[in-house]
Image 1 (cartoon, rainbow, N blue to C red):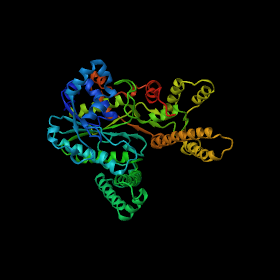
Image 2 (cartoon, helix red, strand yellow; image 1 turned 180 degrees about the vertical axis):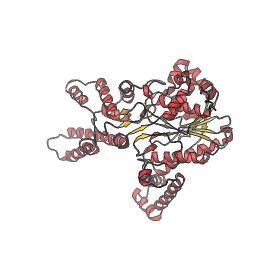
Image 3 (cartoon, one colour; image 1 turned 30 degrees about the vertical axis):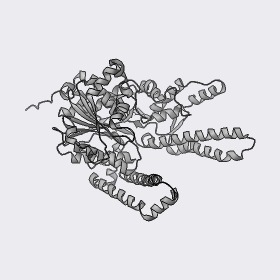
Image 4 (cartoon, one colour; image 1 turned 60 degrees about the vertical axis):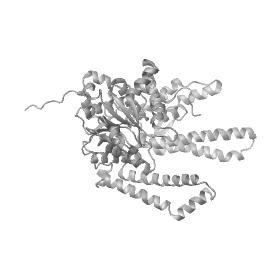
Length: 529
């Protein structure tokens, strides 16, 4: 007997007229999803879960960080400010909530979830090496708390946004698993089971032990001696928290790397995925794993970004003269402009609400249109060379020569000799020798000292950026397969593919890097010098 095909998915049948609860709307991807949905779905409504700030309420943050964001500037210009703000107020409301609190700190969850058709959970702590307790609260326990909220929905559905890089130290082709529970990067070499629930319990136990150890009488006495016996209680608390953060950052990194995740962020995100599926019960869940997000290719405007997207600091440092980086030129970067990612997430939302969703979707480019590190660096270098203004006289000659130097991606050992680490050492030696150098007038000596301090700050910043990016520029090359999302896109009518254009295979990386990425990463008036 011939099997009936699923009906085609359309926004009118799945997304229009629906109410969504969205977390992470103050962040990069969350704003992209919201702006795209408000533009394409005129009858959809959104409840935004936003945390109260130290000085601003959730409602004030909604206005300042979301409504007034540059993501909505095209809509403001097209519709007029008054019409846009009235429409925004009619369709978007705020829910005060905190991922780190039990029940998200929401007093009346049934009332909040009344009429909600789908939860889209974008919020996360995206710092790579945070203290373990904070990362667990937001990336592992946070999704479970959001899941608990779905119990109050008439038809519970949740779209959880994660990252492709939960693959960890695995390299090569990475397929979309039907069920990622029990997976971890070193599974083939360790050949041991991994239970996310047990791992979470072990982590929480570890945190309690560290807190007890650092809170005993001897550690407390040493802490107060260090900050001064007359220090205020707030100063003591800050120092106590710094010590705890440092210890838990180390502990988290060690646990992550043992199992095969390069950092605590990916470790806690992976556990969040697995525990979410383990506890889903009556909630239909799908996971959208995204690539490294970069400035928008087209929507809401070319180059739009929020905060500091990954890789943009590398472009800025190249513009400022950095020419040696650690990396494998042939390494494939899984990079995706945020507007493509937002469209992909909304396509998964269509599948969830249409009853056709798979469990995991890779929302990336490396499987269909790979961008190598060499191609990215060459594109950045060419764009910087073409757009960097030249100063007058000798300075202009130096800047022209500097811009003409190629950007090199070198093995780690060669980079240590020729790159930022050796520059830091040289600047440190010059700084120590400066007081004893003969023939320098006090004013000139002060100028040189100031320049060396500024250059050292630049090198320190470069080292931090490179250390964070190193695993994904040097060590691990991935090709994330997007079979589920490609099949989903193929099931959409042509008009829906235009409205929600996840099309990484059509990105012209050379044009994108030259005309979009570099201008967004390196505005002409901006300089770290």
